[in-house]
Amino acid sequence: MKVKITKDNTKNLLANIEALASKRVYVGIPGEKANRSGPINNAQIGYIAENGSPVNNIPARPHLVPGVEAAMPAIIKDMRLSAKSAMKLPGAADARLERAGMTAMMSVRRKVVSQEGFQALAPGTVKARARKGFKGTKALIETGQYLNAINYVVRDK
Image (cartoon, rainbow, N blue to C red):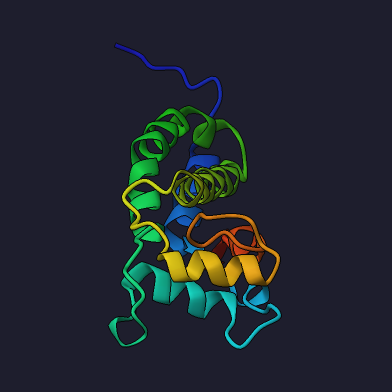
């Protein structure tokens, strides 16, 4: 049996595999999005919200890890489908990593907005917000600064 190679896409495939292996997608509060007005920054708020702070009577409201975990089936499916494009297109892996980051970021944001599994705000917190002119009663959503800071980055390993 003879095999005739009409087009060799090995170079693109190997470049994309190398790109996938050399980069990571991080979801959360990148340093450039951490700043905000107030006594603590967005990254600190995220850590406290994810883990809670018993000393400050703040319950854990996990959203970063569960949000990313909820996105994993879609990300895995998308990465599997991208195998064909990895053979044909240079840079396909970079585009897929960006897409995975966007999918995970949106999932985390949906987790915050849905409040699924979150303990409700204490009545005192709601009253304190009202005194400052904020009407919302959702945890982690007062000014929108924290929600808007949730992002993703693709970085070298």
